[in-house]
Length: 506
Image 1 (cartoon, rainbow, N blue to C red):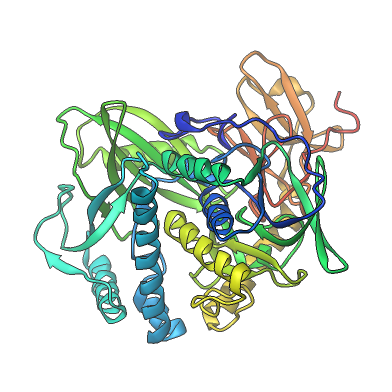
Image 2 (cartoon, one colour; image 1 turned 90 degrees about the vertical axis):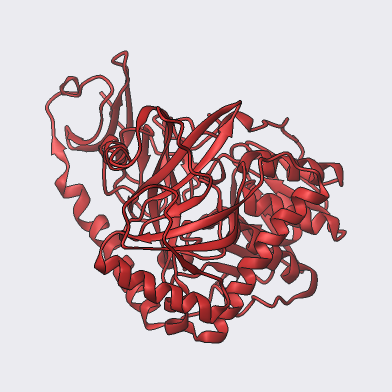
């Protein structure tokens, strides 16, 4: 499995599986980077070029997680709008965020040029459009805040997506690319510069021993000076698990009968907004549309999410067929900005990058810039803004309490809402379900041949009850977003141990 789900994304055929470097028991490394998505690979390349001896450790393969599930919009505006950032953090912080966004976009373009990367990089104009009066008010506030922060937005009468709108604004200077082609090329540069890459090796934790850090993995221990978690949530138990909420977003790549593929980026302003772009793969052009976001584990029949998305897009586009469909995970931070920097409660020189709120290509690149600066110099212009230990806005505390209460609810009540069954034969082929069978809470999936895959239903992270994801064929934890395959293998952390087999499965 090259991606963390059963469905194939538009990008994953480009994933390169590297050979495993068996010996991880190094005498000493400067930096260990955990995770080989855009954050990890870009950070490793930056540091290797600065003269650091680096190793990337990846539990699966390069691009296994959200980097192969993204829609790869490259924006200088974010889910946390600039007017919201001004209200929560102040105008100076909003201006710094705008500066950071522009720098991240420049870094990506600079890498494409410097390394001659064939990743379909294309400049694009983005369009934000309101569909009713409520959305129009949101758009007006968003535009005002963006202009104050230094982001150009201009009202226009044209919506290239043909969706009837009450107001449309265009944002020049945006872009798109093929995310796997991009990080595959960066990985090639990193390895060429002497960087090490270990696949199929899960990191369990980090301990301080004397002046150094010891990274424990499935293949042995590694001694190093710095550790960077580029994994969404770091493994184990730490404060980041309570400051981020896991979400799923749904994507379809569509063939259109009329070949009317808008060469732009588009977004409406629903609470769970829809987003659009196009891309050409092997000579075939596709409309890529996304939306229908929800908390991980909240919906088990995820086919309904795809159906709602296709039905909505079909109101405005002449769909011939759905060529690809997939979902992907992102983490919503408590205050809308990512957490990039020292991991609170950890030894010195242990860093994290998480809470990208669906803007991972830009924030992942920005994290790489920030973290490599912190490792190399101890400082970064963005250190304070993205500090994982920050607690400033009231909204952050409110969301922190809300997410904590949500976790407690799942811990206490989910196990009591499990259906009792007398026989496992009650499950249909292709069905997954958490059931109470002979006093055991079991996560049972019966595949299309009738074979039963039976596991204990407790997530191995903090023991919440997992939920079935019908389309990605995974067991998803609603508390902190850990995800597991049908045989219990970890697909997505923070869990590091697979789901257990039941004591008495029969």
